Image (cartoon, rainbow, N blue to C red; front, side, top):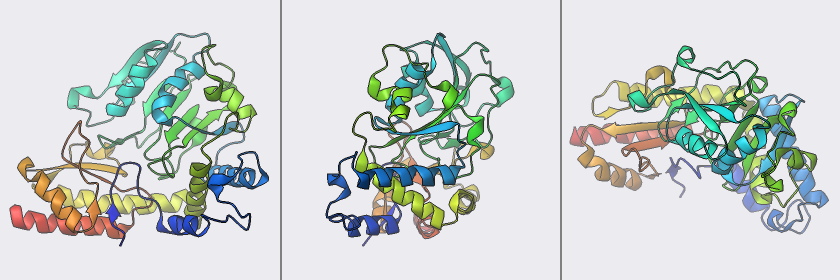
Length: 359
């Protein structure tokens, strides 16, 4: 029997996607092969990759002057490949620090250029997004980097920064496809797939055409966006099975009504959980209300000595992966697109029961 999986990533996938993948495991569409066995240059896999890209373009309304790249290495690797690909003749970049993933991006950026931390939420333990009027941007920066949803801290941008002529680069790993996005306001959008798109192994990069061709000489060919764009993300062997599963997820999202319909479901799911926590003192969420994530909801018990009992009871009630990240402790419920509202309702029912017993 399947459980409600609140893992932050690798994360829950739609059951329909898993069922279809199982049905096609040994024989994809009469080819006599599993997708895992296909040549990435064969007509069968080319058709899978082309459809996945076309469906993603539809879901996000990606303009024609943007390339979609299916790469490897995760968002952590892209933290290095971003300065490698975007610095060109410049030697400085702006970063906004909203939590653990921003800090990792900043650390990698410093290996390749001078990093200007234009704003930071560290003064309030990364519990909010610094208002743009407080940002100290450098007009000569090669780009401005933000993490638009902090998976660990549960902080999300509900607005788009304005950076003028300087390209805006966004790590959207944990909330991409959960809401409508105006891609044209960004120079680069990137993210690991294992949170809201598909299995681990695939990294998505959406990059505006005019930003290609700025790579530093040290950039590996496999991670040079221009070279990969010229080779349809197949300069080297791509993560074929991860692309296939992502394509099935894209089809599933389109069948649900697309990103706009999914956004309304996500708003409703998050509201259920936040509304409950806000009316009890037994549980608390540290994030400023206007900056709360719809995808990753960290919370703490009033008495932290009860954490282990809470997690054990949740497991017994078919709810898994609720333990918070080791850097912040507590609990975390990741309620991505594939988490049904029934999972959130079950969690709230359990939280109420636990509070009655221990409150």
